[in-house]
Amino acid sequence: MKGLKSHIFFILLIIALPLIAYYGSFNNSFIWDDRAFVTENEAVKRLNPASVVSNFIDRETVASDTSLSKDVWRPLVTTSFGLDHKLWGFDARPYHVENTLFHILNALLVYAAVMAVGASSTAAFAAALIFALNPVQTEAVTLVSGRANVLFLFFFLLAFLSYAGSDKRSLGRPLLYGLSVLLFFLGLLSKEMAITLPLVLIAYDHFFRAKEERPSLLSYMPFFLVALAYLVARFSVLGTLAQRQGWWGGDMQSYLFTTLRVVFGYVRLLFLPVNLKADYMIDISRSFLEMEVVSAAVGLAFIAALYMLTRRRRQVSFYIWWFFITLLPVYNLVPFKAVMAERFLYLPSIAFAALFGMFVADLLERFRASRPVTATVRILFAAVLVLYVAGTISRNAELRNEIVFYSHELTCSPDNPRFHLNLGLAYVGEAKKYSGVKKARDLYYTLAAREFEKAVALDPSFQKASINAANAYIDLGLYDLAVRHLKKALAVEEDSRAYYNLAVASYHSGQNDKAIRYAKRALFLMPGYKEAYIALGNAYYMKGDYKRAKAAWLQAVKRGGATAEVVNIIGELEKAGY
Image (cartoon, rainbow, N blue to C red; front, top):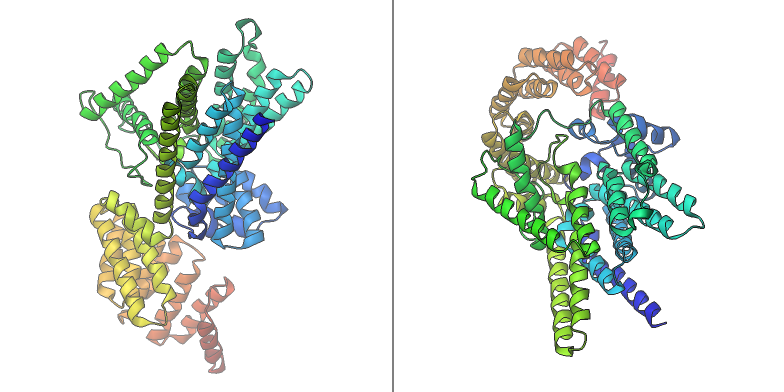
């Protein structure tokens, strides 16, 4: 009975403390990748049986941003967002609540998983809280687009527990084993990080089964076949497994040195989760003699020495292997765009949490006869939790809306052109809210233009920033500045949006012939571009060629892109005989 009461008490705290830490995030807005994956994603808005099938076979359903949709395949996540939209629309609060609830469920599963490999309930309790409250988890949990993290880990841990359970029960063993394979597949459909489960299971059997009882490699075949089927399906949808060509740095040596630093950086983040940021701009290391590379090598050598010294402690060895195995997908062996990200630690951090929890439990057990020592250990552990909760609350406040978020990120990475662009877009969003208040509207467009200018100064080839700077200047009526930026954009690459905006800037400047030429070029590059038809019609109308204006506008009407004002003008032209 005493043991049951302890379990209930631990479970209640594992639920309550993360709720306290993440409660403030419930009022956060959609930010950063949330727009592409959720609010601007047409697949999320049109949930029905046919669209669910599309989520599995059409890469365009992943995100509205093609730079994201061609890189990841997570059909269960898109479907879950579709269900949320069906229930809540685009009210951000329920999405945040749902992510937090999954995070709490994952913490409870960590509690069960740590006990499943032989640790005490005290160690498991400490591990679950360290996992749940570590501020480094905020990117994985607080961003709505972090749903991929909380969802895949939920299935991953259930699969691990089912497999561990099948080892301990003769009755129902095939059912638990089959359930583990199914849950593994669901985890893969949520995020590719789940692919390391078969290796974790091999490590589990190596450390916790007697040599004569360990299964043969053939017994893992269903897991490897599921992983292979996933990779084939992913390749058939995306057309590639990698997100970029070639390793970071361009050669094996630079790749290894940089990866060494990144892996040690993850260890540092787990021990010291401060100065958190959403985008780590990692300089490529070219020599082993660089101070950061040497420091990383020494740090990882210390972990290797710790492993050798504690080999007889199976749980310690297992979790060290867990950490390095579950980081495998982000070692950039298969090249992808992000060198380092906090969200990649969501699964590997369980190893750190488990080792921390076992350390606390060992101290309490070793000095249980000394009340002052055990009291000190409990106070210090409580102090760590308080710091974690405070750090999580603070980080969640930095993620509350796009202006606060990008402004903070730029204090950490002032030379990040992408964040200057995104802050500018956030200011544009605010400007549109004040469309009827000219002074406020113009202020926000001016702030937006300033950020776009900074992005272009940092990266002159950043075409998207140049186009958005032009848009802001058009809205401010500064057409010469708009044209300057659009020509910069076109110097990088021909773009239909740039030509469309040139048409708008030109007819507002009275240069109707140029506007017509630019609008036609936009339509040549993107046939059916309804906004370009509107611009073409406007240019013809201002030139006095009403017949051609009407024809262009009717093309926009046909494509559902005409405003009520344009429709009214068409009606007046028809009355006048055009």
